[in-house]
Image (cartoon, rainbow, N blue to C red; front, side):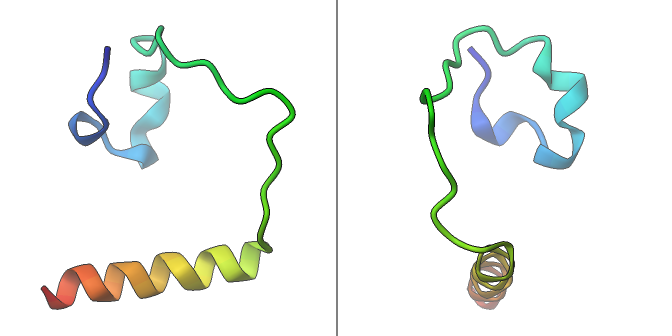
Length: 51
């Protein structure tokens, strides 16, 4: 099991081989647009930085 805090998502490929206990949700779909997702990430990052 790999803890989420123990690797950077941008460096996922080096960690991917260690992740053996993850099963994706079958037929899962993204429920927002890429622009909306990008906006939410930016907003969350700004909120986190402000703390």
